[in-house]
Image (tube, rainbow, N blue to C red):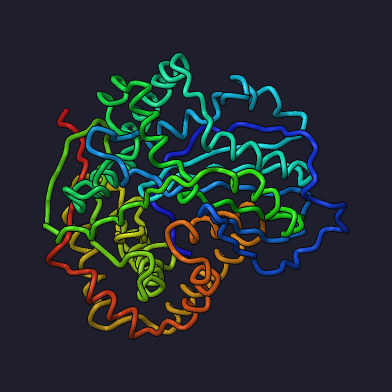
Length: 443
């Protein structure tokens, strides 16, 4: 499946909840799974449930249609900051309730924020599923946003920013998005800026929370040894009781036309880092599986074209890869490499030469077969766990369509070599792209 857009992870927490009535005693685990059941509650909450008895744990995820792209210019980083705050206590659950109840059940909880969404995910023994649903419903709308906790969390978020700056590749890709989406919400940093974080007030965060965390924005996903009807009843009795917010999410605007950019930036270190980027199809495009395979053929395995040409046959780079991130309103194809500064020109020329060959001659049947096989393997691995299934379903139901997610691997299998060549010609223009590089400072 298409790789998710950049996500800012929250440090993992563990979680315990008391007994529940959502599940029944289960037979010996089996990997057989029925298809997911979908339901939209009267207040707009979406629920996806799949009975999956591969183990005795259940994955529960609450997805929110609120991410970096929903922030105003004065709110940069609020979606991510709110993600950090939701497990700091609610009006009925005291500070530290997550940490105190963790180890007894061996559960864990985590969260992530992207440009298009925020999600909260729990894995724990299936017998505690109902209480987990109640907890997610509680934190979704009743977080206390304690002023003292808010101030303490600023240090955590600022440190997260610093760590991101220390990673050349992460920083380079972030700058690539800023240039590709200049003036667009996708060009904004998910973490925000140090200035906005330091000056963040509780009322500003609370206003964002009340505006975006409404039933119409929620999707609850539950996958594991559960009875769908009982999960739906639990969701109805918790999330289903919340009053409608009455506000619809604004659609993301289309991306601006690509403006070619060439920029070198000095950074500490001895190696150079190179990134090239092109705009590509959005997540719901008919060409998404085609570009997925195109990126794989270019640079997602040892046999990929860029790896063979620039690392294996000639050591121009020490590492190179290609990627495709499909977002709700746009997509991005990237090529990133780490190399000696003297090889920057050769590397860029080599990348464009391989793209040119792909645009003119296309791909071989063997290359296409390997890329499809790799996609099938990734898909199979993602379905091995309840957590992997829940992520795919939740993301699809939040910014795509569940039926498209379920049919995606069949669409990948139907891609032809000519479609890959045409996608390369359409999206990978060797004359129009963003090229950024980090180069070592002179000694």
